[in-house]
Amino acid sequence: VNMNKLHITLFSLIACFCLFAYPNESLAQTAEEPVVLTSCGQSPGPVRLKIFMQRLKMDFDYSLQVTAADLVKAKEDGKAYKTLIIVTGASLKGMGAAGVSIDDELARTKALIAEARKQGITVVGSHIEGMARRSQGAASGDNSDEQSIDAVCPVSDFMIIKKEGDQDGRFTAISKGKDIPVVEFELNTGISDVLKKVFNK
Image (cartoon, rainbow, N blue to C red; front, top):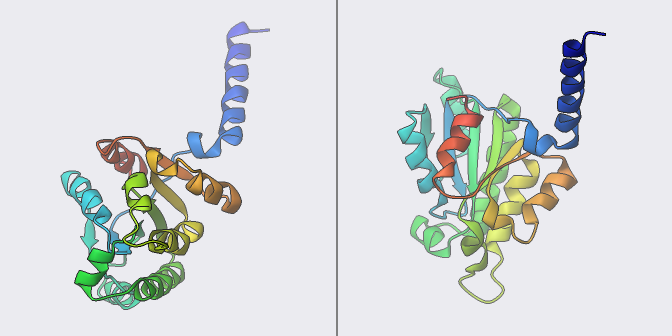
């Protein structure tokens, strides 16, 4: 038996096992441009993502209040989006400035995702502000941030999550329960690497 061939075969089998055993860690999730970046909850999170997308010279549009009608118009104009990134995280201050409520945001997001599905657009759910965003309710009992997560992440194709924001296993539970892959990063500077990986930059 050719030992080199045997070693290669064993290595291949081990590699395949790892891919199936740890799908979220081993399989790179991919998406295509052009992209539309928006929010569910009007938090500052999308601005952070926007900066890195600009640095990578990505083909994207940015609107915190993009609607299903905007997706339709883009397609009619010959620039159909291929990826929709929705950054979750609710800010009562941000919603107040935009003149919308969490119910408005949830309704817009639901219609937006429905149109994205109709067009075959990849939906990426993201939470990039960590536990600070999730735990800073403006008032006792405010769960608007969790509502925004529920509206997006369980119905996304995959998630981009700041690892620190999953301390309670919130996103891990969604991933396992809905079989939705997660791409994680630790520091904000890691966002660039994640975008490069996801969009093959």
